Amino acid sequence: MLSPTDLELADLALVLLGVRLPFRRLGGTLADPDEGAGGAEHQVGLALPDPQATAAVRAGQVLLADRQGIPVAALDDVRGEPGGIRGRVRALAAAIRTEHPASGPAVPAVPAVPAVQAVLAGRPFLADEPAPDVALVLVPTGGATPDGMPSRTLREAVRAGLPTGSATRLAEVPFAFRDPASDRALADAVGRAFGAARTEVLGAGDARWREVLGRLDRADPLPTTLVAADVATHLERWRPPPSRRGLVVMFTGLSGSGKSTLAAALADHVRDRTERTTSVLDGDEVRRLLSADLGFDKAARETNVRRIGFVASLVAEHGGVAVCAPIAPYAATRQEVRQRVEQVGDFLLVHVATPLEVCEERDVKGLYARARAGLVPQFTGISDPYEEPDDADVVVDTSRLTEQQALDVVLAHLRAGGWLS
Image (tube, rainbow, N blue to C red):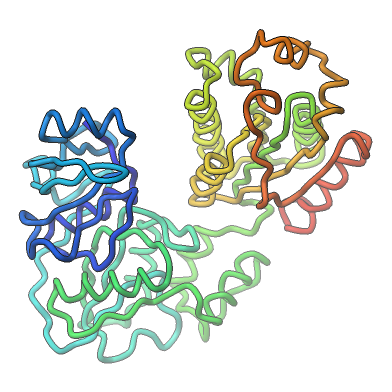
């Protein structure tokens, strides 16, 4: 039984509700627009590793489950295709619920609204919105907006922004934002399912919306000429200024680069000089307490970093500061952690770019010597790659900087961003 990601669950929910998705993305659960017109007839594809794909084809059926392990759909008549499998999607009884914890509420029964305009809300309404001809507002569930606003906050802020007595109707739809072109195409497909003649995306690129976010970051008041007072209340609760916002600082680098020392020094500085709650997730300590069941192959190391990111995101969600110091050698896993954290707070990646030869000279644990002797397989930097970040927010090299100098570089960035005074 497979458990798709939140993004895939949102896609799957739309397919089951009969929405024909207008594009295809290998790696998710997406309908092929050339096959089928209704949910029961949709062909969908799933990216799977070869062993899982082979087993699925042999079985002929795959169950798709939500995060609680409850089956919500089945892929029947499974056949293989490059990079995964394809099958005919069928809703299971467990998927037909008004409230679904993973994919959001199912689309309510809203009468068709032909020849009117619908809006997919990627943000709340600003002053003087919506336009008078907007009869239906589609509020996405199943994930955050491009600015990281949770579905619940968006729903309440959109409702608060409607004029008193407005006849505009709200309908919640499972939707995962991707990029402007895909969002527009999918919004049109969802709007047509409701009978709307056209659907626009209330997107995050509007200059006035960027002004709203800037004011929130600076703790400046939001004037009613920009957003209604009730909307401002929801926004201020969702996005406090950086000095009160949850933050994850992840140090990444080779073993012996100095990342653990810097992480501890940063945590001590924040604890000693601010009132912010601070937690440290050091790589070695996490290995003993949280990931003792894992080995050191690629999959295990990715899982270890995901666990660190999950715990750190919980700290950030409640306004705390989490300082992490794993090696985190793979770019895709670091990006996955960044995306998770940015749904609830801010994320800062610090690359401790100390050269390999310096790390080997230090070799306080004797790990490099053992790896060179072939006694430690898949050792990062020797027999396994370290993918240097191209998205690091801060880069320091402890072979050129003292510990205090490197810490000062990180602190300067935190002060410039408003996270520390």
